[in-house]
Image (cartoon, rainbow, N blue to C red; front, side, top):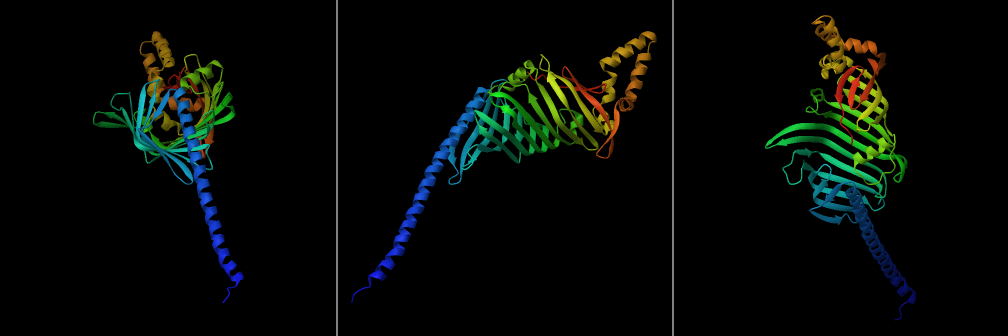
Length: 376
C-alpha cells in the first residue's frame, strides 16, 4: 500500500516549525545572555569610574568582597563590608553591605541601597557614632565624567554618639532627603548646582534644646560661581566659589516646628575666612514661641550691642545699665514685632524680618541666634 506523499510532508512541517522555533528561542537566550554580560561589564566599569572620581575627591570606597548578579533584566553588584575612608578629615565609615543596581535598559542610572548599621570614627579607633535606618538609598544619573543628578534618601534615620557602652541620641528623622542636580552649565563649564534638603520630623537635641521638638524642613539652594565640577573636596569648591565672587542663593526655605512656621529666601556669600555673610528675608508665625525656645531674652541681654548700651548707662548712673538690660530682655519679643513688618502666613499672624549672617554669626533682626561654621 503506497503512502500519500502529501500526508508525509504535512507531518514533517510541524516538526520543522518546532525546530526553527526552538532555534530562535535558543538564539534569543544566547543573545540576551551575551548582551547582559556586556552590560554587566559596562556597569562594573561605570562603578569603577565613580570610585575613581570619588578617590580624587579624597573619598576611598572598598569592599570586603564583591560579586555581580541580577540576570536577566538588571545588573546587581553586591559589596559586603563596605568601607568609606576620607582623607580630610581622616574618617572611616563602615556598613554591613552595599547593593548597587542598574537596569539593563538604563545603564546611566545607578541605584544603591545601604544596609546598616553604619559606624563612623577615626581609622584604627573605636567608632564614635553609629547610624541606623529602616531604608537608605542613593541614586546617581549620568557618567563619572558628566554627572547629572544625585540623591540620598533615609527612612527612620537614627544617629547616636558612642561612649563606651553608653549611647547618646544625636539626630533622628522619620524621613530625610538630599538631592543635587546640574541646573545650568555643565560639569566642565561654569556649572550651577541646585541642592535640596527635606526633613520630616527631625530632632537634634544635642545641637540645641529647641531642636528636641520635631522639625519639618524643606530648603532649596543654588550654588553659583563654580568653575567646574571636577573631583575635589567640598572645602575647595567653596574656596573656588568665594574667589569667583559666587553666591549661595536660597530660593526656597520652609521650616515648621509645632506652631512655629517660617518661610524665606535670599542670597548668601562667603568671606575670605569661609564664613557666611548676607541676608535672608524671613516671614515667621509663632515668633514669641521661637524666641522663648532659643532663649532670645538671655542672648539679647548679653549681646555686644546691649553691653555697649548698658556700659554707657552705667556711666551716667550706676545700676542703670543692668536695669535697662533686664527691661530690654523682658520686652525683646515686643520690640522685634514692632521692628518687623506685620503680615499673615498660612492664615496665622506673622512678622517679616531680616535673618542676617555676619562673619558666620546669625541674627534675627537685632537678636543673635547662633553661629555657622566656616565652610573652608
